[in-house]
Amino acid sequence: MRGLMMDRPLLIGALIQYAAEYHGDTEIVSRTTEGPIHRYSYVDAERRARQLAKALKRLGVERGDRVATIAWNTHRHFELYFAVSGMGAVCHTINPRLFGEQLRYIVNHAEDKLLFLDLTFVPIAEKMAAEWPGLRHYVIMTDRAQMPETSLPGALCYEDLVGGESSEFVWPEFDENTASSLCYTSGTTGNPKGALYTHRSTLLHSFAVCSANAVGISMRDSILPVVPMFHVNAWGIPYAAAMSGAKLVFPGPKLDGASLHELFTSEKVTLSCGVPTVWLGLLQYLDQTGKRLDGLTRVTVGGSAAPRAMIEAFEERYGVQCIHGWGMTEMSPVGTLALPKAKHLDRPMAEQLAIKARQGFPLFGIDMKVVAPDGRVLPHDGKSSGELYVRGPWIIGAYYDDEEATAAAFDAEGWFRTGDVCVIDPDGYMIIVDRSKDVIKSGGEWISSIDLENAAMGHPEVAEAAVIGLPHPKWDERPLLIVVPKAGHQPSKESITAFLGDKIARWQLPDDVVFVAELPHGGTGKVLKTRLREQFRDYRLPTI
Ligand code: ADP
Image (cartoon, rainbow, N blue to C red; front, side, top):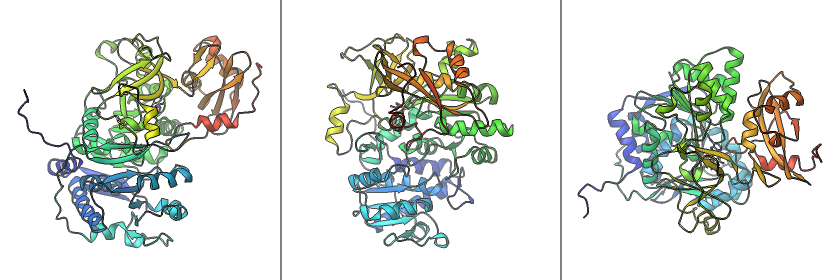
């Protein structure tokens, strides 16, 4: 028997319409690429998104066309998110930190028609333009007065486009499974792969992210997403904020500790989201200046494992709840979050911290299974580690126009293969052991590079740490620990090994420790292990 409820589509246009109607005077504040702070409201943003949608139509954009952006987190990028998807086209966000070859590939593979770009990225586009023959227009996201001299063919001015249109536009209705946005994974090997989200997947992901077992976003929040809108839709925060009527504070290009702290204070930010490297920068700034984080109630951290010391610093020193999460571009991206359950709240602080340092339990909608190399599905016993497979309504069912990558990514039952090795404990908390390609295989056992890195980052003189496996004639591979000391410190090898001694099993301790000024980071802020492996290819461990 079919039920008798309305079949109304879940659409991104409706999100911004709702925000304008019921939270119209809620502010959206941006540090602009040009420098000054810009502020307006959801009513203004929605009106300008309608004007922009009309401008896109005038430029020949039709439903299903891909419209690319290379831009910081600002109000203009926010308008693009809603104008492009809302009119039925596909908002293709591009990560400017990708290499030239990757940029060439994804714009051509996506067959982007238009490219909107911030002033900062004009030089990148100028360098690439000859390799992007399909792009019909470049739109520079600034006003007439700030338009630069550029070799980009027929460059248009964003404010002229928006200002030249009336707002007489009605958000159209269409099938909720229509493609809404596109994001390529940075792919350390092979070509980048496209995750093509739908209106439905985006809205379901937003409901989940807003819920209280997740980040618990409400209209009383003021949210500063440090995670970039040029990668996995800033973890869905722009949509989740519109859905809940939360104030948005966009940091523009300035992501250093001092600039973030200034906005946290002036805009009474309650929630902020970022990768560990961003929070390392902020915590160092707080350390140096003695400043506090008044008003901020929670931060989320993901993209790479959050070191326990970071969670402890936020919670114990600054009184800010630190929510560790895990996800992937292919998962919109949020899959799990590590909030403690009621029964954990009266446990000793050290135990609670250990729970918060896990990657977390899944949001409703995400199914997880752990699979052994021989294909056996492993129990959730906190001990059995294997590769993590997932499925759910905001996880890709295929890569965009890439049969080869798609064939490799799913099992016979349609589960998506994450490439992460994990265990799941009896309470349902998932713990990432490693990326399957980063785990160190020593004498038939696995050593987690993440565990070693996290432990090393608890050392008071260590700013950042990375572990790679180097070939070893007896053990196959053994770990090398690479350390960036904190500014003004010179820790010794011995002090680090001694520090790790009571935290890590003896056979898992690194065979050597080396010090470097900085680690190579990829387009999404993660340490580039491939680069480190190349860099230390000829390094000889003292244990050989
Ligand atoms: P994003 O681009 O959103 O950072 P990617 O799709 O590039 O995501 O990378 C996803 C991978 O990042 C995951 O498969 C996992 O290996 C790693 N990752 C993400 N969050 C965490 C986390 N909290 N702890 C450990 N690894 C993580």
